[in-house]
Length: 320
Image 1: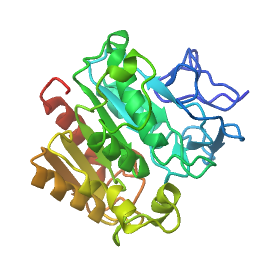
Image 2: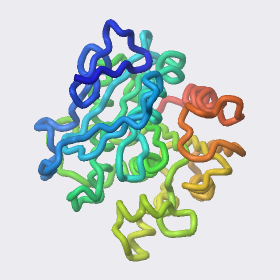
Image 3: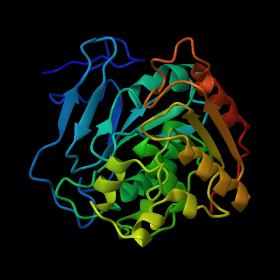
């Protein structure tokens, strides 16, 4: 059995299953779907696999692949402030990062910010699954589940946001633009709850699927090797912004050479044109994938505090 201690949990309570994922007693694990599998889906031939990339036990850097039964891992503060964030980590639609853009958020957002985090292990394209909207279905279901069960976690159902990183930022933007898009059949009462995030935070997000700023790996894994121009445009999130897209907070580094800052600039311009409240922070240094690590001494290190202040300033409105 592998034991990995996660930030915010003492050695007396933290525990993990054989795949390194938390079990009850540390972070709470919540299945998205009543039967485990999403409606109409089938289990992949390969079991889920968790890989550790870090040699430092104090700084785990795991990722998961081959998710057949998507789920949430919940990190709760000692004194919840009523706000929740659905976290959609990156990984280029090839893997789902678990720590750098998941558990590493706990000190800033949970322990200091009082926010309850729900980190999503979503299904990926390109693993024998033909449904390119599987990840969006998981994100919709996750947002609905959090809102439907808000009382259980001492949450305000009108303060449920989403934060996405890199390709997970693309998924978060897809949720913010496409929360009403029918991508799976209703299964229970939870699916009658609104999937609209009350606000969204996109951190070095993949946005464009068509132009020179597109991330080739994310595009190919999601859309295939030679997607038609119409398909590329449909999945380019700057072209899908609507008046009811949630208020948005954007963070990017100007020296990001993996997902260029033009992605955030294009999305910000589309938000402004649609009249959606938006805040954009472009830092000169940080590269790609910085999360909350590796930015000590850079102005980029300010982004979690700026994000928390922005979240606190969002007005409470009833979700459509």
